[in-house]
Image 1 (cartoon, rainbow, N blue to C red):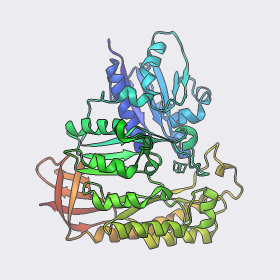
Image 2: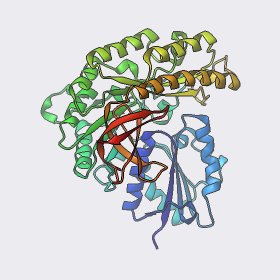
Image 3: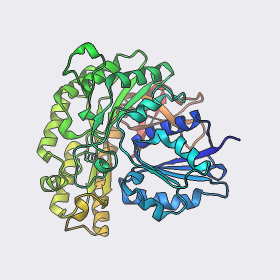
Image 4: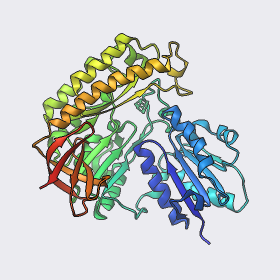
Length: 441
Ligand code: SF4
């Protein structure tokens, strides 16, 4: 009888991408996926360690998901990489701990447990390209919108972030491998490609063709031009960018490539230069604003989203005020604001001046109110305009569909034909805080 597996994924788009490869790898090795954890022989939890809550959730989830049928519990991803053997102490029923670089080996490890050859296995080694080699060209389960990892890890060492410790130092996949991946996806029906990297705009991959010359690594803009030339691609995005790597060449690519969305996620995190320095972000607020200004000069239709961290150690009300001011100057289309979350092994976790939780909460509320106002006015400005929307899910009501325009705004329509996976021109008729509403033209 074939063994069944259930997978639960936490965290960012890169984890979603990794999980899809894990599913493909498991299925190629004869395991059968189930969406009911109680009927699974194997439980796989693929984890995120960015916020403390996410890590805690994993351990409480094991208790809820396991059943009499469970034979193997595997914890993978960033929590596994960060906590290593500690995981076995925190949960006795975990059999396998695997880091984000070795998921291609998971079926072998599961066989060792099932065959009784081992009871506990840990592999948190950092193997840079092997997982891509093992999974490339092998996943048949293709969607209309696909993530493709082009770069992984990070050398920036922002003082609050665990990524350099969990995903390792920065490396880029070879351009030719990425292009082969994308050609296969497009040939199988994918319409939208989202390039992923922890620091995606510092992409520096081996060139596509060996005869291009010795110093021929490609930057992100070069890669984007090449991908945009693939027949059948309808929309191209990338995330997440670092402001310091936002080059004029990359800005120009937005102006010249029609399938590239005129939209970029450029996280500022704080508007205070003092806090930015403590965060080790490598730019000042003015430098950041200048970049966005240049971007809009080069490509006038550009809009931006950002991440914000509120209540970083020692943040004063004046520092916080500078953050709100930045939000009011840029008027982001979409934004994500979080309370600072202390993570072990980071410099910021050891800093004096940790801000009390209630103070973080009240600052977060103030910032979110401000961000919402800009979001509402961006949404309102779409009324009367036609937006090109890719629909990716059903709404709560019958015949209701929800999709995204180029600026990641949610667009809701009613339609009697199924729109999932379709691009449509939509006339926007009304707007709310989180969505705009329209009709199919
Ligand atoms: S650039 Fe992003 S991924 Fe890298 S350390 Fe900073 S926050 Fe983390």
